[in-house]
Amino acid sequence: MSETKAPSNFIRQIIDRDLAEGKNDGRVVTRFPPEPNGYLHIGHAKSICLNFGIAESYNGNCNLRFDDTNPEKEEEEYIQSIERDVQWLGFQWSGDVRFASNYFDRLYELAVGLIKKGLAYVDSLSPEQIAEYRGNFTTPGKDSPYRGRSVEENLALFEKMRAGELDEGEAVLRARIDMQSPNLTLRDPILYRIRKKVHHQTGDKWVIYPMYDFTHPLSDAIEGVTHSLCTLEFEEHRPFYDWVVANTDVEAAPRQYEFARLNLNYTVTSKRKLKQLVDEGHVQSWDDPRMPTISGLRRRGYTPASIRTFCESVGVSRADSVVDMGMLEAAIRDDLNQHAPRAMCVLNPLKVVIENWPEDHEESLTAPVHPQNEAMGTRQVPMTREVYIDREDFREEANKKFKRLVLGDRVRLRYGYVVRATDVVKDADGDIVEVRCSYDPETLGKNPENDEGQGKLRGVIHWVSASKALPCEVRQYDRLFLTANPNKTGEGGSFLDNINPDSLRVLDQCLVEPGLRGVLAETRYQFEREGYFCVDPSSTDDKLVFNQTVGLRESWPRQD
RNA sequence: UGGGGUAUAGCCAAGUUGGUAAGGCAGCGGGUUUUGAUCCCGUUAUUCCCAGGUUCGAGUCCUGGUACCCCAGCCA
Image (cartoon, rainbow, N blue to C red; front, top):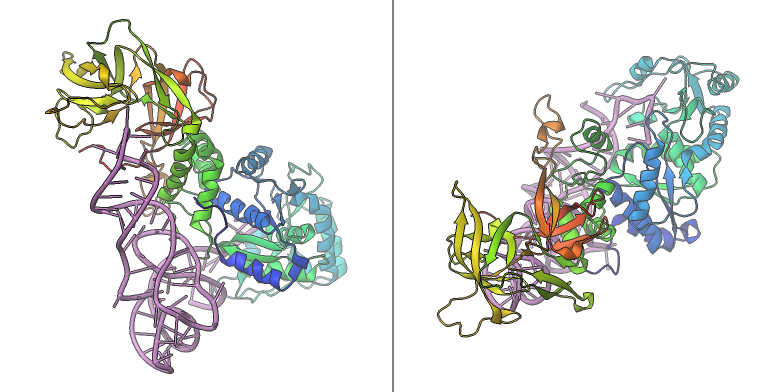
């Protein structure tokens, strides 16, 4: 993995050019501006990596600013989760956390300034009338009858709005721009609306709240942001962003640049939809390991580094795109392959009795923690007469391609001895309940001697001691949706129609090697030959619980 | 329908005075291997949405099309 230098993208090129031209005295200031109305997801991670990454590589600063102008949808819980997620990803904002609501006094003054310049007016049209007067794509808008109010009247009315003397919906403050503009956001955009709601930061101080389009450019300017990076859907808003900066008395002139948002197949990245999944119980919580939220990925076992390298690998451009989930999986495999300690865990246990192993004999076998990294040391694995292997690793008969245990043939127990299956025991239904084996005591750490006529060892399988292994629960996850684009539905359908009903599989009879006793939540392992797993927060000493992060890459079909 | 955008491999994505198509993911072939993993080596666009044009030379310039995305919240 070369993490040495960030790849070229159009935004970095713009910054390079700005720096070369000496703009902003060489300062680079960005910001990550979430609205606290939901949990952060993988799409936000892209924005976070972009904004903080740029600040980092240009010796600049990146602010965390909550865009909290709509008290109806926002909550303190979200603020905390967002701060936690950003830090978990490995980033630290410059100075204190900012809130757009910190600037409400200043914003109010600037709005008054606009009124005084004749650039804003109080409109008393109803919400329905405002929509009607705005026109549409084909029809130009028409001026509100209130558009010509005098400065004095507007000042008085705006003050009445602020003082709570008007009801919600009775009046709004609008910019006076151009009702005929082909760009709908320029048709006298609303600056302030009345909302008699308690705000999570400002309490009941305000009953009027500024709109995003007015607040954002000003917050950027107030904070000295130089490059304001947002997603493509805000592109049409840029002329108004510039209008606000140009027509208010602020100290800086930030510039907005837009990039394509991240889409991942087989999932959704929309706060509204993710919230719906939680609220309607399709998943357990925002941090359900199937969710593409930062907290869900974290609980699933993703590392901050893997999410960062993923974001770097998808790049930044202006083309709408859908990234394959396989890219995310590749990023975590790459990280965990290098760093996760190995362990053996049997998911679907099948008992194996080694008949020539003395009844009470126990051996402690030495195994590396990581076969490719000696520095990670070794671990001890107990070997006893009875062990468990995975049901899928045994067959009564199979062709040569089956590299596992077959009746009459040999296989190596990983880090242990070579065993031969000599017999099977079945229950009344004919299901295999036990395999009888013999072992070769001369095969620890070396291959069998005098092997003529025996054929090649079929392979190596993992196992655990029946008497020493720890019981555990393993949760395996499949994609949350059945279709690559869950948003594409039939007539009148919902994305919920595409939910995968089998996205969670709980295996509660699993057995893991005893060395994992007492492991802490979020510890990650590779269970050899199975995949990468992470200890769930609900795990206890009595009942270990693991989440499967991702399986190992498989070049052989699981079922044939 | 008016406006704003975007088109380079199955998926992302470099390509900046026009000079002969990076890289990653996935795939395929081979080697190593006590994980069917990892690792290693090789391979995958005669062509850049289409059609014309300019030029010795075009993914890059010009003209005309086509497809897809975004905008009609007192959401962000």
